[in-house]
Length: 205
Image 1 (spheres, one colour):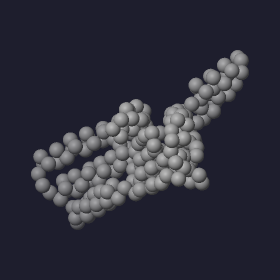
Image 2 (spheres, helix red, strand yellow):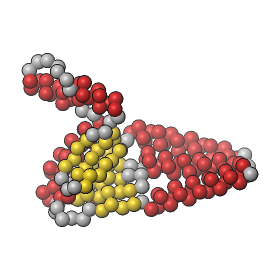
Image 3 (cartoon, one colour):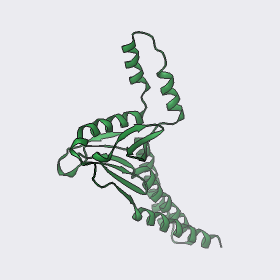
Image 4 (cartoon, helix red, strand yellow):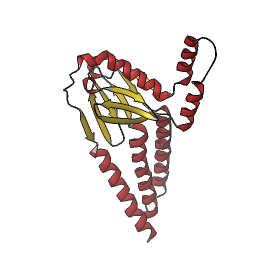
């Protein structure tokens, strides 16, 4: 889920990404690639072209939603990389980081969410049950609740909060916060979907 890297050369200090999403994403891309090879060997027709376009369109979506999203941290900023949008937050602009069903980064009155790691309803219920009475001393009970009750998104929020505490004093609270739509990804999704629809309609007519 998380990996650490050197601070030198502009590399992120740490990154978080969905292991399950990456596994599913790469599995689909391999499946799609094998099917595209098979379709290519079968010859050219509108039907095979429509199937191929559908595989490409779905693959673009899989890459955008399962493989692209990450949370990356540098000594001067935090990057929430989504499927179609990137949010760059200097540490000085971050006021708090917490977790609910997803990761939430607060910058004053604005709140940005990342679903790279998330806790579903079942995970939250399990966390609440594990934080119930466990017996023993108060300190041991608190420790047990802390260790047993954390979800994956809780862990990420705690790690990013630790980095925020470390780097926020070195970052200006007036630094620019950037929200960028990834138009290349939007265009790729739109174009591949359009081509797929056109070929399917032509093949069916």
